[in-house]
Amino acid sequence: MTDTSILFRPLRVGALDLRNRVLMAPLTRSRAYADGTPKELAIAYYRQRASAGLLISEATQISPMGKGYIDTPGIHSDAHVEGWKPVIEAVHAAGGAIFCQLWHVGRISHTSLLPGGAQPVSASAVRAKTQTFTAEGPTDTSEPVALDVDGIAATLDAYSAAARYAKMAGFDGIEVHAANGYLLDQFLQDGTNRRDDDYGGSIENRQRLLREALDRVGEVFPADRVGVRLSPLGQANDIRDSDPEATFDAAYRMLGDRNLAYLHVIEEFFGQNTSDDQRAMLKRLRSRYDGIYIGNGGYNAERAAAAITGGDADAVSFGRPFIANPDLPERFRIGAPLAEPDQDTFYGGDAKGYSDYPALPPAH
Image (cartoon, rainbow, N blue to C red; front, top):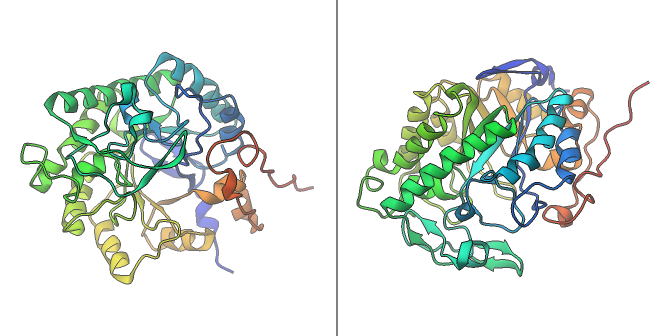
């Protein structure tokens, strides 16, 4: 049996001392009120999972234009702050720490979800060949419009405001979501960025919006309380790049220069196999980042321990296993079997399949 004890060694991540290296990944559950305020259900849900070394909140939109799915939470109003406060207080009371993942979906949206039926925005007017979830169920995404200079300025202002609201709510830090084919990823990758201005063309220009967003949130939270999430393999939301290794090599280096709390990388998407070539690329990219590195995707306790032991990660985040196993670190520690999540209750609904999964009974 593989020794997994390394998962339970403390780890300094930016300004935080984490009690273990089993982190909870962001998990969209679509159980917020229509205005983006978290429901009271979220208090129990996050408290139950507070034994994670770090909780990263479900993706949380920074503005009304950043919304892409029905009933997802926001962090752009006083009501959102008041909704998140008891969640964070419950996590802290249970000895946990929680970051807020700041999210703008860009083109992965639908006019029915946006103010006044507005079109989604993106780096360029390139429609995504994918679907999102609306009141009508799975729905093709709408045609986007390219952000103009004023739109970019408004988006950066939204990042600033969202960081301030997150701080007011009491989050321990923030994670900037630049993965999974959402807005910042749409600017990074040339399959969606067809611009010829200062935000397009060269890799440096395509990084600009991410750099400026980090500058803005960095005026609210120090760098050691800011993380970034990337997905170099481009396996989600119809995102692609003509030379992903060059694009993400530069991104890793740029982020490494910022002394952030961590870099959080999706190395494999559920249901998709990562090829040997892709794994080799991920390993080469890993060598470009000297800070705290969080791996995600395709891990179990043994593989996570092996990655940390081998220097391929400092910690590992888990998504689906945390849905059905609120006490996941303890189950890993004692080698207990894992419960299987009910996929029919992943998105939307009430406590069923959300906060009703039991923890293991206390040992006597």
